[in-house]
Structures are given as structure tokens and as C-alpha cells.
Length: 288
Ligand SMILES: [Ca+2]
Ligand SMILES: [Ca+2]
Ligand SMILES: [Ca+2]
Ligand SMILES: [Ca+2]
Picture 1 (cartoon, rainbow, N blue to C red):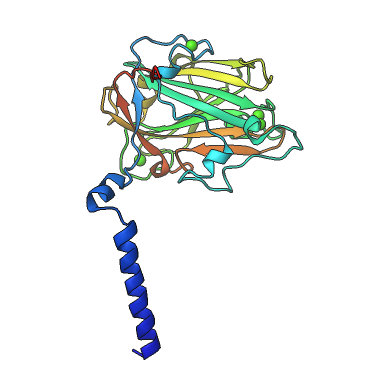
Picture 2 (spheres, rainbow, N blue to C red):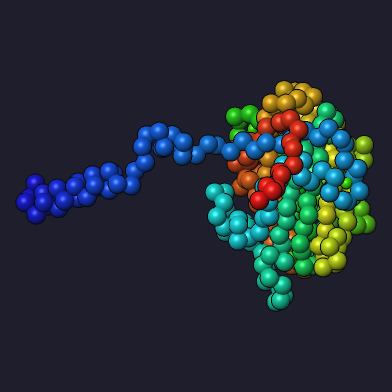
């Protein structure tokens, strides 16, 4: 080793050592800071909600992780700028009013409950190349669920389900859509059977924008998950599924805006594990 490089090496090693001794936490602290792979808790509901487009009776007892918009998504580990985006239509609405939402999930012995409270600046449910399965070219929210969770990377194969709701208050027969798969078939596309779903869309819930909406839905798990992976069984505390949310917002364009939350797309290995847990008490505010 030539002398100058040897000196640089020594000084670098010394600097590294001094950094270690001043900024590295103890081993105990490191263990407590180790990231845990997310396992999101989805609570059971004791009292079944009324599916009427008003989430207030169960929103604070459901799983929710707060308000999502493009600003927040930019800092999520699954963010990809090509897929998470909003389209510029020359509107004056802020990024948050263009699209932001809170999402809710819960369960009981029969149903998976899904909810969303959404700020949007334009309701758009038509497109030039309409086909029933093209919910992703319309204002729509889809929950992708794998039930039960497994370690096999599948793309709408066995146990994978997409429940998509088009925000069309005329409730066309493709308005609640089911993309799913079996052991030998992928991407089965069909309307959710009326006996498998109940849902209500309520527009302009806050009197702020005609394009704002609330979505409240329940999915019959036996009629959907029970038709997928034979490993699925009626839900109980501790069961693990996986999920992601796809929120579409074309606003007069074609593919337009998309938020992908808790996952990266169709491969179910990118979806986030969730666990069915017991009832959740609403968060209490402190006296002072
Ligand atoms: Ca309700
Ligand atoms: Ca929008
Ligand atoms: Ca899988
Ligand atoms: Ca929209």
C-alpha cells in the first residue's frame, strides 16, 4: 500500500470508528428499531354496520391508517411514480382535493367490511373503450385481497381477489366487480353476484364537492374467498390475509390518476399482510 493511500485509509477508519462511538445506538436500541414487516390489524365488529353510505357507526372501530394522498404516497416504500399519479386537467383544485381518501376495513363471522371517505374534484365513470372489466379507467376503488396469505407469488391466481367498486350511482351491473383466480385459472373477471355484495355510494357527503363520496360495502366471504383457495376457512381471530388498495381517478382522461396503497400491483407478493384481530376500542383523547 502506497503511503498517501495508507494515511487516507487510517484517517477514514478513525473517522468511521469515532462516528460509530457517537451516533450508533446500543445493540438493545438497534433491536427495538429493527423494522418489522407490516402486519396490519383488521378488527372484528361486534355490531354489524348498516350499509347505507354513512361510515360513522364503525369508522373508529375499523382498521384505518389515516388520510392518503399523493404527497404521503411519495414516502411509502411501495411508491412508484409511473403508477402513482394524478392527471393535470388544468383544474384549480389542490392535489389533496383532486384525490385524497381514508380507507376502512373490518370483519365479522360472515362479512368483510370495506369503506372509503373520498375527496375528489370530478366524478368520471365513462370512457371511450368501455368494457365491463375496465373499472380501472373510471373513478373506482378496488381492494385486492389474498385469503388466506401464503408465500407463493401469484398474479390473480388461487386465493387472490379484487373487489372493485365503480363510483357510478346508477349502479350498472359492472359497478361491483370481482377479479379472482383458482389453482388453474387466473384473471377470472365477472360482476360480483348480488348475493355476495352489498354496497352504497353517497355523493357529496360534506357538501363541499359534488364529486366527493363515501363508499360503504360488505363482501360475503364464503361466497368469494370460499370459491378461491381451498385453504380458506370461515374467519377467526389470528387469520392472515394480504391486501392492497387501488384508487382510480381519471377525471375526464383515460387511465388518468391512480393511487396504489399497501402494494405495487397485481402480483400478490407485493401486497401487505393483514391479520384479523379482535374488537378495537376507539382511540380516546386525553383529558389534558
Ligand atoms: Ca353505515
Ligand atoms: Ca380527481
Ligand atoms: Ca400468494
Ligand atoms: Ca374523479
